[in-house]
Image 1 (cartoon, rainbow, N blue to C red):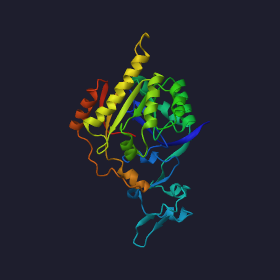
Image 2: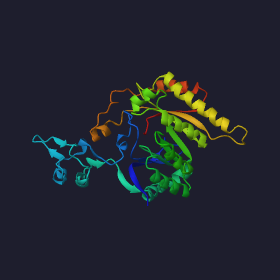
Image 3: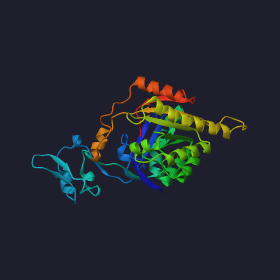
Length: 321
């Protein structure tokens, strides 16, 4: 059985593909987007998260930690020295208040699919299914493949959410088992993309073209982030790129009976609800002072995308990745 690391299994998702879905958030990502809504999914291995508001002061973690990373000062202040922490999990095991938790757990594809199938009736009635997200599902290729294969065997619709900043071979390995691809596009200027995400955009743009050539249905998702890409000009530039991809697919199907698989755009509004997650990891939340876009702004940006002549699904308040 293939094992992998997951952060969360979210049931009754309605923004990660058609119908009611279960979204599986996998661990590990090649980007470092400063606003990431799931920072616990970025690093490839589990790490200990500390939520001070849950701590009941029992000091069981202090006794359990072999490295002395968990302490209380004389004034009662709780201290977690992350420099000493080796993520052995001893403190997590004794923290019944769940103030200390692992950011991910190791599990098998079989166990993941067993939980997914608990909601089979909802998928059948709504046209839903399963979505692999993260993090980046194309980093845990064999694990993701087995989950998708088992879901396909059970008759479920399958989807992946990807940043596509991975070798093409990783994505290509998942496509035969995937019914829908959702891919993020954050900025067309490579230097600006690097400043915001820690990586240039050449690889992911090349992969976007490969995905179009694969013939799969694709939703290109634009996370609208203040100071990054929240102007009509920046959204229009992304939409123009998608328009060219739309034309590429149309040319591929020229003279072939039937309609090509759809390529659409969806805008996702930034939110600030991830602050506690950053604090729990001991990270600085660089997006803390950003103001989420208003409905009026999102409408304006949606219209800017539509002006490029491509199908736009609309906008969503909140981005799961």
